[in-house]
Amino acid sequence: MSRNRRAKAKAGSEDFRGTPSALLWAVVAVFLVLSLLFNFRTPVGRNGYFHTPDEGAHIAYVRYVAEQGRLPRFEGYSGVGYEAHQPPLYYTLAAQVWRMGRILPVPPARVVRMLSMLFGVLLVLVVYRIGRLLMPEVPAVALTAAGMTALLPMNVAICSAVNNDSLTNLLFALALMEFALLYTQAKPSRWIAWRMGVWAGLAGLTKVTALLLLPTMVVGWLLVPRTHHTRRWLGLLVSVGLALAMMFPWFVRNMQLYDDPLLLKAFERTFAVTARAEQFLQGGASMTEYLQVVADWTYRSFWFAYGTPQTAAKGLPNFLPDRVYLVLGIWHLLTLLGFALALWRERETFAEGAFRWWAVAGVLLLLVLGAFVRFILTYFQTQGRYLYPALVPIALAFVIGWRSLFPAHMRHTVDGLLLLLLFAISVLAVSVI
Image (cartoon, rainbow, N blue to C red; front, side, top):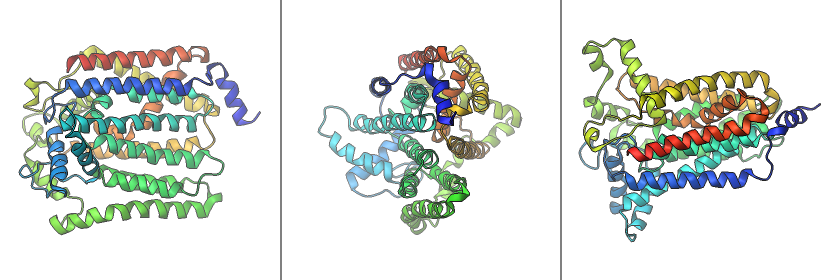
């Protein structure tokens, strides 16, 4: 029996042909409703609200571009504000929405939030597409992973605020989708390398974090089978070269204005006054204690953390009840065990080439984690959203791991249970903001 036939036999009792598209749009509709609730229940332009991080500074950047028609100069906390060091793509797009929003009976910032919502919708659809490519005979995996992305409360909150994270996360997902197409299709399009380079280049014009895509792409192209020697090296050169070429004008501008292509030195000077790891150590905490606090708060805020008028002044997070995170933590550990079991026991349910994609996704996740660890060793930052560039593999692994803990005839039920629980937590999150 061929691998595809074995996969069909394995997935047979859980296949629901004809329904995924309707259910997918239902998931998108729920995401939009939750996003609108977050949008209109959260005050606009407050920097200290944990679920709309630094929104006031992001709005100042957008407003400047909309009103002045040019990019601002980074002047730290003065001038346009401390987010003016960010690459320009999101703010340029948002400025057009800001101008259009002036004619509407709501504040322009709330209209710009809807641009982030659009990027969130596209992210949900891309997660679904990747899931279908990796496990084409088990559409429930793609649908449930898309649902998890749409119902993850902190992701909904980030996609309901003015910030460049929503676009960054979408572009990371699109780059990963190109690798899924490259590895799983019998005759992948010759345009994959070009599209991948465009996504990575646009990501680099959105947030500096996107530089992590460059080593990821190198590894990804090196994993192309040796039988496709020319495609491997040509794809690597085209995708990485195009991405760097698109980022180059931004680097040149930064060199001309600041003598610093990535603005890292200016960033460090400006944020020298923010909370730092060394302050905790000088105050008597051990490195272990510091890392425990960071890990705890980061994990909680990966799921959801929020701000109130009382805590916003100091930028401190509020959390849901402890038992919510305890349940989520135990649940997550079980899914990790289940994912390992799925890779071992259910290999035949994955498409040919899917394991190469998981290798690339694993590299990206390690790079994102490494960058975050390096950051928190200097600055006290406990924001789980910094892990969202790797949200696609995190969501897919969570869903695959959860389903693998149950027999095939129960998997529709546990899919629904997963989405129902996340929906309940999202409703709780909306109720407390």
